[in-house]
Image (cartoon, rainbow, N blue to C red; front, side, top):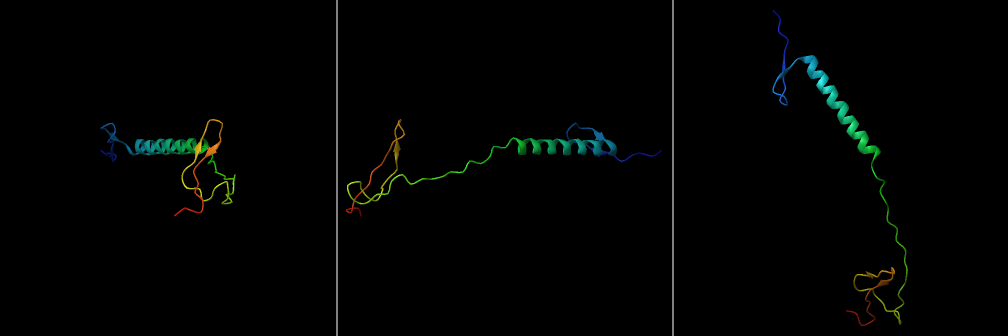
Length: 88
């Protein structure tokens, strides 16, 4: 009597025949391909940041050398400290 070789199935605790193991591998590969395609197709595009100079300090009455972080108020105005020629 000929016995087919069996593969251990760690997930369900039973032995699989070679045909069943091949089917299980095929199903697993199809699931992985589906998951990859899902992630690829639902990926959000990367948003690039652009910067625009809004003021060049002249060192006169408008100040010079921006010194610290900026604060944005509700009207979207920017405020921040500067120091003049007496900066260290």
